[in-house]
Each structure stands twice: as C-alpha cells, then as structure tokens.
Length: 529
Image (tube, rainbow, N blue to C red; front, side, top):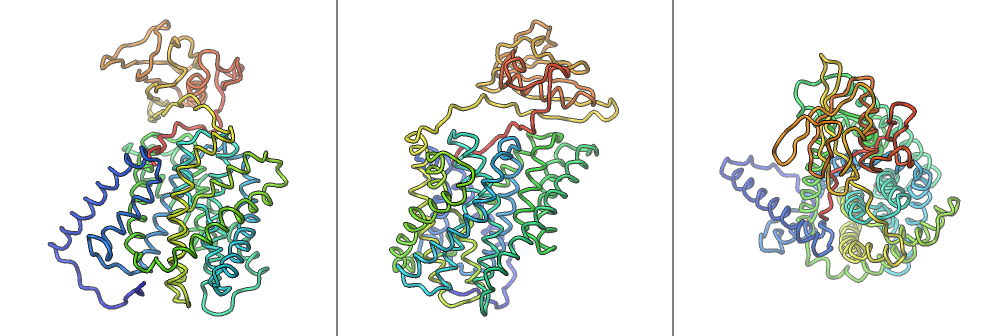
C-alpha cells in the first residue's frame, strides 16, 4: 500500500468537478440500489459498499488510484461521529438503561480480554511481533456501531440482548481508540496502569461533556421555538457534533460524548421528532456509504493475497476464543443465561471501525503497518460475511427470537407558541393496536383533543364514537401542561390498545390517563441492511 503523498495538489477545474460530481452521484445511486439486494440476500450492505470501492479502485474497472490513508482516517472519523449520533438518537433509554452495567463491563473488561487473547494468537500463530499483534488485537476488539445497529434492527431479539449489544458498540470505541493510538505511537508503549488511567480519565470527561451538552441542547430546543421545522434536525445534529468536538478538545472521549449526547436528545420530547429521525437516518446512510466506499478504494486487492490465511486464522481466534471468553468473563457478575451469552458472542460484529482504526498505524508509519491494515481488512470482510447473515438463524436456534412489538407512533410535535400549546400529528401504522379504537377510548387528558382525522385523502372532524383505522392521520391539539401526558397516552394505546394502563401496557390512569413513556420513540430505523 502506498503512503500518503504530501505534494501540492492542483486545484480542480470546473470540468473535473463536474466529472467528480457525476461519478459520486452514480456511486451513491448504485449504493442505494444495493440496499435492496442486501436486504433480499441477507448480506450486510457494508460488504457491497466496500466492493464498490474496490471495483472502482486501481485493481478494478475504474482504475482510480487512491492511497491517502490520512484523508481516509479524517473522513472516517467524521463518518463515525454521524453514525454514532444517529445510533444514539434511535436508542431508547428504557431499553438500554438495564443494560448499562453489562455493556460497561464488556467495553472495559471485555476489551482487555479480547486484546490480550487476540494479540497472543496473532503473535504465536501468525508470527507477528508483539507491537503488530497488539495493534491487531486492539483494532479488532471494537464492535462496529453501524453494523450492530443495522443488523439488530431487523432481528427481533430480547430487549436485554439488544440493549447490551447496542450500548457496547456505542461505548467500546473510546477505550479501543486510546489503545490503538498508544500502540501505534513512535517509541515505547506506556505501562498498562498508565493506559488504564488514561482510559478512565478520557471516558469520565467524555461522559460528563456528552450528558451535559445533550441535556442543555434538549432544554434549549424544547424552550425555543425555531421559525422553521427544518431547522430542528440541523440543530440536533449540530448539538451532537458539538459534544464530540468539545469532548475531544478537552482530551476526553469524543466518541462517547457524541453517543451520550445523542441518546439524551433522542429520549427528550423534542419538536418535529420524526423529521429529525428521518434527517439523521439519511445522514447515517450517506456516512456509511461514503466511508465504506472510501475504505474500499484505499485497499489494494492484489496485496491481500499473502495475508488472507493469516487474517482468517486471527479471525478464528477472535471469533471462537477471544469473543466468547470476553463475554463470559465480563458478564459473569450479571448471571445472564448461557443462550444469551452465546448469541452475544456471535453478534460481536466488526465493520468500518476496525478498518478506520487500522489507518492510524499507516499514518504514523510504524513498521508492518501495511500488513496490519491488510489483515484487518480481510478479517472484517470474511467474518462479517459469515456472522451477519447467520445471526438471525442462530437466534432462532437458541430460541431467542421474539415477536415484533406493536409498531410505535412517529408523533410529529409542532409548538403553538402564542396559543401555549402543541399540535401533535401522526399516522396509525400497520400493527398498531390503535386500530379499532374509538376516539373516546383514547381517554386523553383534559386539555387534549383529537381535532381532525384524514382517511383515504378525506379529512373530517371526528366524533367520540369514530373508530380509528390503520393508515389514518390524526391531528391532536394539547395545551402545554398536558402535552407530555397526551403523547405518552397515545403511545400507550398504540402499544396496548384501548385497555392500555389497565393491563400494565403504559399510561397511568390516576394522572389523567397517561404517564411518561420513558422516552420511547417511534423510530424509523433502517431495516434494509
């Protein structure tokens, strides 16, 4: 692999810029179309995007020569910020809260176990020196947020398993980045206790900044009425990026800060929330496509041949020894059943994060960095190809698949500042238990009312006896004091039907028929991977 060049680049002409835009647009369209192929075949879409990059690269039909590892690292970091922000925005607090101790143990104790075991395998079985072996062990010990989020969102797993895996993928980037930077630095590596201290300090700083920025951002967006609904999604993503930048500048974990800030924002009742989720979802797709295609461009396929079997061997150690041992040791205090531990062991998916981290030694120029990158690239491709499609099958074999929960509501909330109220709008989706419920059976709190129903293109003012149907679009006006209670009540009925609250499915009849739903959100999550 060629080293990054430092010479002066000539500025692009208008003609060259037009050609670049054309090629980029075509690649993006092909990548979007590839999602459908991915969803039907069961192949993770990241493999298709990597394949696109390889296809247009120097060994492919495009013949594009790209060897700037430093630029790839910068763009990859930016893409990871967006992906972590999108994942945090879609993470339900009531799902992840019980999983935090287990996820924290996996992200700290588990990473240490994984790095040690994988590095030992790379040293003794493949013959790498200890620095290279530790680099590979650290790089591949991070589960990839994009891969985990995309696969878990189409596999109906128990909430505890999903919560642990999502939280782990959001948390473990931070300690792994610190280890990779330490192992890739020129000169001697710090003592283990120094590394532990750095990790603890950076995680604490990142967590504090992320939670603070997220809370302040949510408070501001709830109390400041912006002049246009399209500004809310931009503001939310900007707040998440501020958390990352502030955490990094303060020598904390920027990745942890952006994930926590986004999670706080995602569980706050913000105006125009479905539009924000859709905007973040689109940005997440663009970040993934751009990042994977660029990584595919960076690799030189003919150089991978010699490192194929070493990568497979290291991957076997990681997948069959290090990851199960990591899960068993980290989760021992939590008494998690063996079937769930087995699924978590197989669901430690790797993706773009390890490949991006493998560019760090390329940039620093330590000896053997090319081989480290090649081994990591092959390992990620091979084992993502094996693990991703087989995860649903394993969940069924372990009897851990669950039925899909009733579809939640994507409630759009627009503040009516002068009227001191909110206009809530939503559609009743397929699978919602609100289908067949009469308007009067919603039992909205005093101060909230269904004012309009749109059905089959026709709008009308509903009566108390009007029966709601799938596909109906509703407008609900609620005063400020009961806005949260009204939204929580609507979500409870969507999940539990007309008897919600009486059957323990949400809603507190003693306080006007609604309670806080714990930050539950109707997430338009990606299911096409």
